[in-house]
Amino acid sequence: MGSVTWLTAGLHAASGIVALFFAREVGQSYLRRRSPSSLCWMVALVLFALTALADAAAAVTGWSPWLYRLWYVGAAWLVAAFGVGTGYLVLRRPWAHAILAVLAAVGVAMLVTAARTPVDVAALAGGGPVGGEGWANPGVRVFSPLLTIPGSLLLLGGAGVSWWRTRHPYALWLLAGTLVLASGGAMTRFGVPAVLPAANLAGVWMLYRGHRLSREAHRVHRDEPAARGPAGAR
Image (cartoon, rainbow, N blue to C red; front, top):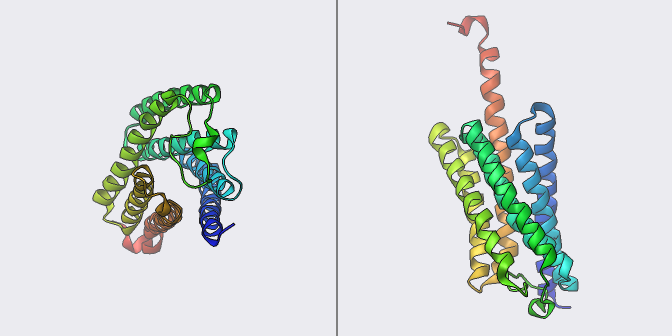
């Protein structure tokens, strides 16, 4: 097994580990505040970790039908979950609920279809980054853009809205992370899969950095009135 294979597996595994640490922090935030945005982001990050670890396993052992199903469905679901979570931050609650309901219905339909559709393991030989070419029937591929396109638009739009409202660097980190993750997937679809492991690792780290900066900014904002004290009150 070549060094490139191990490097690819290592990058994917590192992405998964970062995502798990990230998910832990977001999960703790959800337990404190019960925010639907935190719940959606936690789900997205757990799915990100699972798909990254599936990529790492496939790089070493090759793809199996169920590993491929996990990876393909999880990759689409996680983008939708990121988008819905961001929607809860920038949209009115009824709109976010409606988007969640529609994307959840699409996601369940995708899962059922994927479970019933045969996987062409021969098309996945080599264990490297793949797309939708492993499906013996292309019907499953119809669902992926129905989840990833609105999810990506919500995530990008939410980061842009946050930047417009706050002018804080955390929004730029979130925006940059989203673009890096999207570019890795796009390059894979255009036949340049080698960039995907590094793009995933860099992208999830940028999102993590943006999240930490966001927490610090909100903590400072909450502490300012107390820091000013009675003399600062008007």
